[in-house]
Image 1 (cartoon, one colour):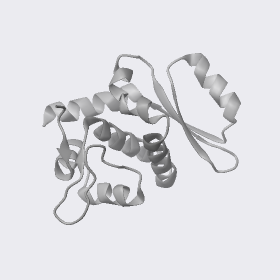
Image 2 (cartoon, one colour):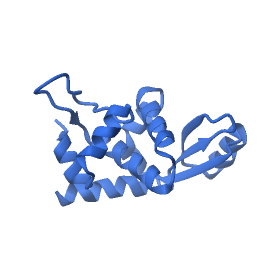
Image 3 (cartoon, rainbow, N blue to C red):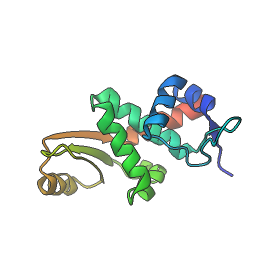
Length: 152
């Protein structure tokens, strides 16, 4: 069985304050994939992929993406078709120059998209015509979490 993480272990591993994760949980931006706490005495239990999503959310916020947009993208990706792609972040470690882009569209909608080929960048940008584009190198996020896990 893959290693799982309680909230305090996730926070210690990624060096994030528990209150910050609690806020993201309450906002619905992060959902534990192993076990969701269901009342007094139960705990949230996270997977390695959850750690990657948490680090991705933090990376987006630190890049300047407004929390609301970053959270919406991660929550959407976790519950929609992109879920399979984002849950398999480790696959991207083998694919150099894989990026996750966040598009803010003229109507205020937010879209997250994965890409690994240069042609994808221009095709998707033409298709969506975003007002703002944030681009995150997934290999950087994966390596950062891998190093944090090794260090614990």
